[in-house]
Image 1 (spheres, rainbow, N blue to C red):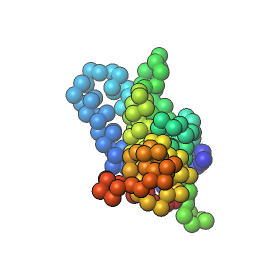
Image 2: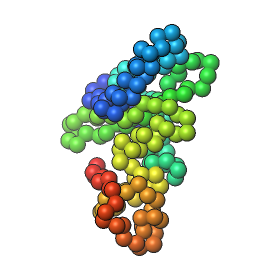
Image 3: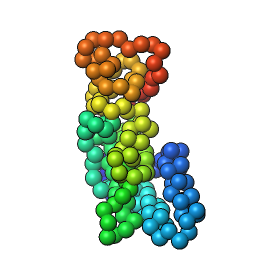
Length: 172
């Protein structure tokens, strides 16, 4: 994990731009909604901090009911200081490919914490189905569909039908 480094590439994906547009549209539709306005402002301030090398709130870990985001971190969004943070930013630092290169900080998702929505969204954007660890995903030589390891035959030796929709995973 990187911290307090300003020499990094900062990437906000089109999906995150869409997440921010949703927050902004909520403020535009309801200009007197103080909570919505504070949420948007807090999100932008947190993104600026991340761009400047802020280490975020905490590292994520693998939980079997979520996509594996153990290579990611999260930042809590405090729109109301008297309530628990309702939103999260999920992001990761991607190491440079060359020894003298710089890290790339990739913002993956901005969204609600409730029911793990932002974590499922981040997993979807990274092409990571629920029930697989990063090690299991990197060991697969075939496309990964959104099914559990048992359904895919990884534990039973079965074969996946070719007509199923697939997600191809790129290696690191």
